[in-house]
Amino acid sequence: MPFIMELLKQNKLKLISFLLFSFITSAVGVLTLVFINDYLLKNAQNIPIFYFIVLLLIFFISSTIVELGLSIFGQNFIFKMQRRVVKQILDTPLLRVAKVGKARILASLGSDVRNISFGLLRLPDFLQSSILILCTSVYLCYLSPQIFALCV
Image (tube, rainbow, N blue to C red):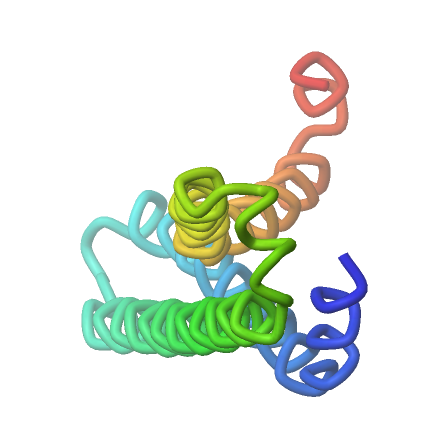
């Protein structure tokens, strides 16, 4: 756990920028909903389709940037963690390794790294989805507080 906290402190600026870009992506997603609600559904004869396409492109580009950035960050995090664990095992005295057992060490290495890898690969989806749910909830509350209260 201290290693994770240390790594998070070292990458505080990256994490803040990922959160900011995720919020921007979610806001653009909500703006797309607002655009559909205000322009495409109400003004059927005069559709500003160019603006809608630009808004969709901005949404897809920003979500791709956030997804790639968080994936690269997660892969680097996993690599650093694996390197540190292997270094700790190599620095461990041979008698201690023999006492614990090589099979047990290898088994814990495989399952721990797999679980953390899976969690970090799902982190971008979780982060973007959570922020999108928050933004759409605010928009729903703006449209109809009664329906929002019913949903909550």
